[in-house]
Amino acid sequence: MANLPRISPFGDRESLNSLSVEEFVPPSAWTEDQTCHYLLVDLPESLNSLSVEEFVPPSAWTEDQTCHYLLVDLPGFKKQELKLQVDNQTHIVVSGERQVRENKFKRFEQRFELPNNVHIDKISGKLDGEILYISVPKKVEHEHQETKHDEESDNKDEKDLERNKHRMEFDEDWGKAADLYLRLAIEKLIKNKEIVMTAIFAFSLGVLVSQKFQSDGH
Image 1 (cartoon, rainbow, N blue to C red):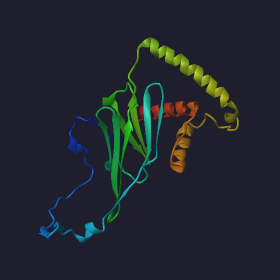
Image 2 (cartoon, one colour):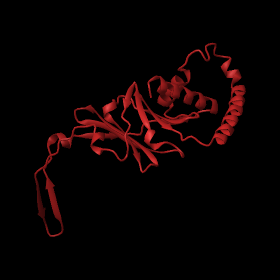
Image 3 (cartoon, rainbow, N blue to C red):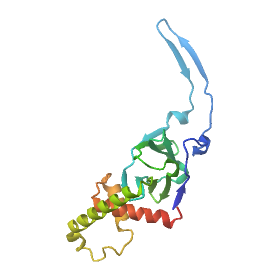
Image 4 (cartoon, rainbow, N blue to C red):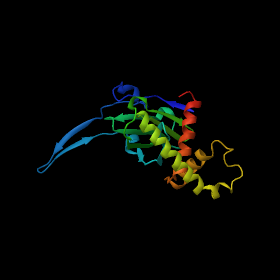
């Protein structure tokens, strides 16, 4: 799993550059007639045929008791072609650009509103295959609030498990494959281009992603 660098909005902006850009000054000249001024710019033929495709990658949020997780489907992208920034401490900005042919590029820029009460300086991302995982740690609340939240979560989980019990019984290997929820989420992310998670699905996926970060030394 490739680790994306943790980027502070107050850090060195130059470190965010992932593409090499050669600057040049094309020849130009002004001309005019009785009604207008005209600027003529001589551009290289390669630029005239340059194609840039903008796209919106599929994405989905999930969470557990300690973190929010943002999953973004980015097939074909490499770590060095992606940027992860925090904008005004209110949004995550994920962007990327890659060359697909000699004169064609694909690029995107997505803004995601951050949840409340999170650690901005602890946001990090990891690229695993085609999926970018962004971890947004929650701030620790007061002990009594945590206890109340845990009790509500336990009651909710019991109800969800009972509601989905009949579905579990159809899968003999339910619970044996540690990455079952993650695999289903990724398949849904790629095939349907959107995710609608039930409470039990989202909670279980959040726990699994949390374990993935911990196992990778996050």
